[in-house]
Length: 345
Image 1 (cartoon, rainbow, N blue to C red):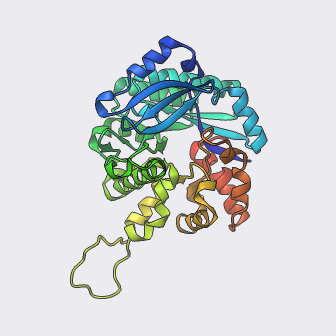
Image 2 (cartoon, rainbow, N blue to C red; image 1 turned 180 degrees about the vertical axis):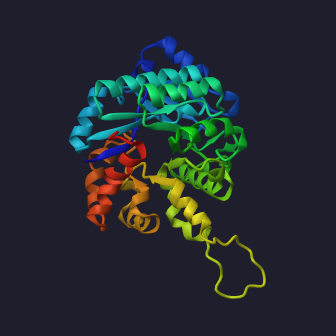
């Protein structure tokens, strides 16, 4: 069994239905320096998201989200199931637009039997109508969880403004997938360089998000939640030991750091999981290190398909090539996603 826990879905009709596209673009919060526009180059229609305006962050390409193509690529990669997600635009979408996306993903899932399992998208503020959409997706449509963004505006998810939403998710015992935002809240120094912005920016956003969840009272307020962070939590494994230092074995005149008595590490183990977003760009050494630090039982394979098809088509073989046990490979490629999203239930 192989599960791609990070396959993007976007409504193909937005490339051909002018009224639907206008409605989608009209919701973009330009006052918060986000811009979306349509372009056509070499016969290929794209929607380009700039965040901030003037700096491309996301590309949605016509033809990338055709069901038959997605299934054919899954077959070519030997992937049995995929978790469907929205590629970032849920950061600003209205409840009505979220419902449209949820219905579209549900239609794909229904037409493929059990091969595709969507994650619901909803506005992050919560409220009775949002609660109703969550229950519709989880209970009526059989969605596998809920997808959120790492931050909204200038606020990360530990902010109490999101309490109504998380109270509902906690009561439901939902698995919450946290997708990176293209750049972190403080991003000015990253903007001028494409790869720094588009790769490291996402990582910085996720490390900030994971750290704030751990160091705040977030998981004390919502003890039933399991959070799955994209981009391996921004490479959290690289600084985990630094962020959770053990008490010094020697007498120190000044205690400059918050030593972990084990409670923060336990909070991390109980509540936070790490989705790769793609295997190959991390490289062999980094992924093997991530397994050693985080544990294979906390790492989930995903591809960000269709961003680069090779991440799907060659991804399973790349994970299989790692110098880790076969049991660990099976957990990463399927076991963890199966358990988190209850795909066999």
